[in-house]
Length: 310
Image (tube, rainbow, N blue to C red; front, side):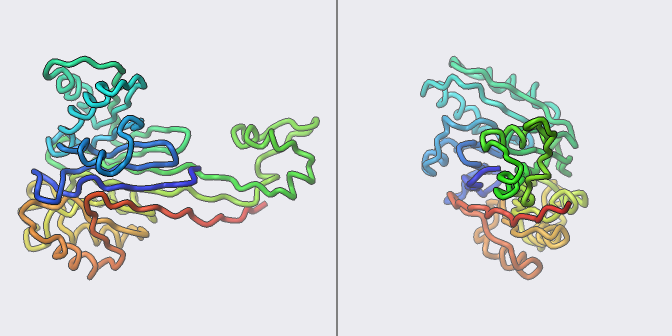
C-alpha cells in the first residue's frame, strides 16, 4: 500500500481543445509510481505544467481510440526518447490496441531509445501490479472502449505486541506479508496471527467515454473517486446519448447508486461554455459532485483499518 495516492487532471475537455480546457488525461501517483489514463492531444504540455516528471510514467491506460483520447501519446513518446528514456513504457488499451498503436507509432521519422510494450485488455480483463490491480468493463460507446478501475492493494497492519510475544524478528515481517505464512523458530506462523486489522486499498474508477452503463453501478461500488464523463447537461441527453456519451444528470445518478465517496465531472463538450451548469445539475442529485479542472490535484485519503477477527 502506498503512502500517497494523488490524482491530477491534465485535461477535462472532450472532442477538441477549448480555451482553458485541454483534452482528456488523468495522472495517478502512488508514491513514486506514475500511471496515466488517456493521453489526448497536448498532454505532454500539460504534464510539464503540472511539475510531474513525464520520464517517470510507467504505464498509460487508454480507454479507446478516438483522437481526443490518445493522439497525445505520439508526441509524448518522442519527447521521452529525446530526453534519453531507456525504461520500457507499458501501454494498455481495449481490443484492437496492438493494431492501432503499432500503426500510429510508425508515423513520421524518429527513433526510440526504449521499448513500448503494447497490451490489449479484454473486456472484463485484469492487470495486477505490486501496488494495485486494474480491472475493466466494456464501455457503451460507438467504438471498442473500456472503463477502468484501479484498486490499491490491501495492507495488513501488524500488531507489535503479537510480534514480540511470538519472538518474530522484525526483518521477517515483510516476508511473512508476502507469503501469508512462514516457518519461524520451527513453528508455522500465519499473517493473521500478528495482524492488527486490514486497511482496504483505495479505489479509483475512470469511465472514459460511455453512455450510461448499468454495469458501472456495481463496478464503481463505494469507490473513493469516480471520474465519469459528463459531456453535456440533460437538456441535450438524446443527442449526447446517440453519440455514446452521458449527461451530468445521468452520471450523477450512477454516482449516487454506486455510493461513491466523491464524483468528479469530466470530459466537457466544447459546446458547454460554463461547466458550472453541469455541476449544478449533478449536485442536485449527488451532493459530493466536483468539477474537474486543469491541473487540479486531489489526494485520496487512506481508508480506516478494519479490526482483524479471529
